[in-house]
Image (cartoon, rainbow, N blue to C red; front, side):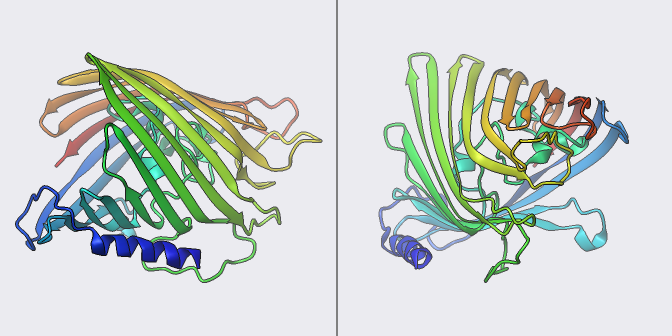
Length: 382
């Protein structure tokens, strides 16, 4: 019943939202644009774990389609689709990353469909450049990296656990004197597109009824720009294979950035209320001493960093740590970007990751996983 009321309220608000907004296209006329990016990456790493290839290439491509129009009363509406072309075979060559419809105006913005929610899009944390240092997907190149162990989207040291691109409805308020807030609701985390989850399969871990909220404040004090942010998320869990229910997860995130001239510094903090990371016996291998919680859980996360950016280049340095009941997992990164031409950039990042919460074996004298990674990327935005 709560879900029906929420959806009805949102649609009613759309129907009566008539305050004119600045028109970008003629009333009733759709304007479609196509954009996206393609990047080629080369990764090289050295780890104290076994069976590592040590190097790999990767291609990452997305095509974005945005169709929008302006209603007679002035508000804007449209649809956006993000298509990934990263399949390993012809049968899986295309995948829809995000697909949603939206309506926006002086009343704010409503989004409905497959798109990250407010806790993801409005989170404030360490600034980054280029490949994005600790905010990148460096773990795609190496097993046992810090974010490889997470069972819920971004439930680590940058953002609060969230619903990712699961089908949802989100509202963003207009910016009022520097303040803005957002609110999202997702019935089933991990469910996208036209699929409907009418029930759940016993033994399969899922999270449902995810509520995300966030707020930001931006202001200028002379030559200094300040951005503050806070976010929260709550996810209900059920159906873990081991018979241990994940339970509800309530998390908070806060952060700040300060910008002066071409320099930006900032950081953030995440409080995870016992977020379940892995079930007993699951990989990666954990340090499972006697008398310890049989479930691996995340606690607090921290991040801090700084950037210097002036056309055509930028450099950044950042650090993040996630504490768990098995020990800390942290990442240090430094990197840069150089724009060769409009839309063409070279990016490169170095990473050093340590994971005391992971182990190279189950023996009592096993050591934590430690990895050095270098990633070079050539990217075209179009």
